[in-house]
Length: 520
Image (cartoon, rainbow, N blue to C red; front, side, top):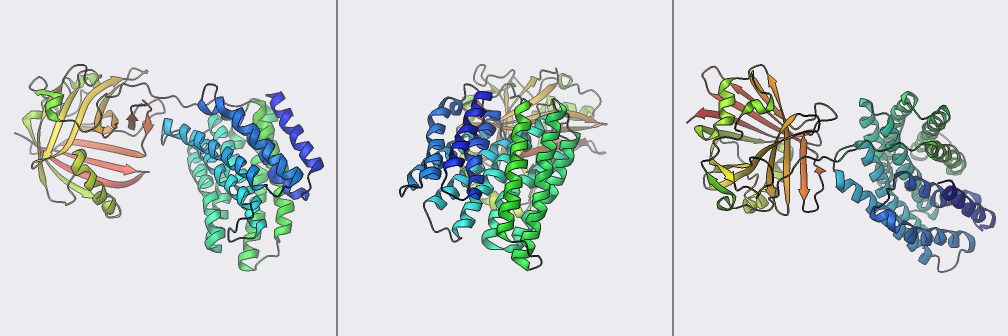
């Protein structure tokens, strides 16, 4: 790593000595030649496709930047597009990392999004070098390019590395603000000074939280701690001057000029934020805390015909024995429903949230064809009929798999394949697969006793929990969806049962289903 860092610093020094451009333009060059390569090495893993291709695609990119800075040829657009292609490869690597995990491990998502953002930096850099009319002055075009290298790439990577060390509850909130801010800044500069002001406020609140987290984090040594704290704190200082600039440029309240911002803001970001941050993380790069799930998933994908799954009769319910899940205190009627499902009638009322109804309508055009998660759009109570089908051994791949078929009138509403698995900690989970075209959606539910009631939830109750909703494809990745579901099943005073099924997307409620369950 030391040799790698030394080579990149020497290349930059050569460019700095012989460059024909004014010194402020080296602020972007040092990010391209030094900071971006080193930050990439923090997260690259041996054996991954990007790691194997890195030298073949990075060396031409770095040489291209050097050519532009040293010679400024008339054909500078050619080396600029080579650098743009390099940033696109980085973005694809970030996307591939995200697709392996999905919406989990926000510290890793921060790193992924930073790598995706840098392609925008490459695009604005190309537009500047190629003298493309972006609707802004050349200086603003260049400044947008530098913005996406520092605030939109380096900052998310540093945030992700900090999250690997220390992730309190406030971390997710601060991270979301800082990840959204780069795009809000770009939108604000283009359309509205008020949006630009809002983006700066996002940075201020997010950075205040991140600085506090950095102070509380435990680092490998004191030198690293001070370097990282100084890095984040310096960015907090520069963002205050950004606020003054926006107030002056957009509202005429201050006299901060773009020339002052270029010198003060640019130099502080380059020398203190980026250099201290890179030096600090070079002392010790924290390992990722993310562990890919290992629970079994169904082999069945696509539209499954009932007659291809097996035959009714062998299994009477979702499970053979609820004691498997440690259930012993809930109402005996609820236990009987899960063990003898075919003895009960099920009536449901579907409530789509108003904001989600247009999406529900569009999805219904697909669900009618796939006959999966095919729910009514109205709020009238309907009876869901069906049976429990024993899945042929070896067809699903999970233990004791059985399909619960639910129909509304003559149309299939659900074909849910029920099984179970035991986590590495020894806890049993309900493992429910819904075959989809070319994929399978798997709901891993934790069963929790609440007095006489039973809760089934995909929300994690602890970091080691397998609970969640995942999408798996033939490539075998466990892509965690931004979905959560929760069931509450209870016995009423008249002996009947009710159940409430709620669902969220990005923590926003979008669907609830109320069930009446009666003995047949």
